[in-house]
Amino acid sequence: MIEYAIILSGIGDTGRRRVLIDRAGLQRLLEEYKSGAVTTNDVVDRLNGMPYEDLGFAKVDHHRAIRQGFPEVVFGEGKTPDQIVALARSLLSKSERLLVTRATPEAYDKLLCEVPDAEYQQDARTIVV
Image 1 (cartoon, rainbow, N blue to C red):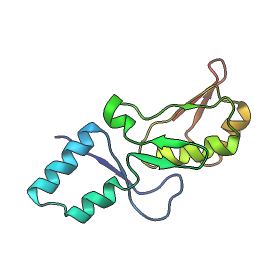
Image 2 (cartoon, rainbow, N blue to C red):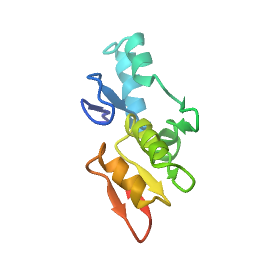
Image 3 (spheres, one colour):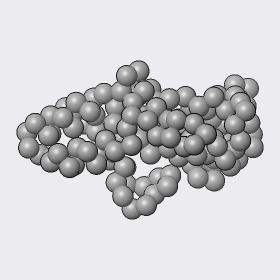
């Protein structure tokens, strides 16, 4: 059975449920709507913030996971640690996965405060969740 995940805590936790949508999850959500298990308002709430979120310094593509099977990758070079944290916060609000390339140890240290399961690969200069 195709399922979508509901996460109850994590980055930017406000007590609201966060729905992680990928292609299979979107299909399941639409099947639930068709069967009457969820209302139109439920569907709209779950898809809120898609496909793009404007952070001012970057636009986050939340539909990439649906189209490509993996969420948007953050190119860390030239971004401040605060910008990388903001991008990670946005991406992790809709996905369980994160990849930051060309990341600095400073960006990792800043992100680790909010995402304790983040891992830094020093040789590859990547942050992965």
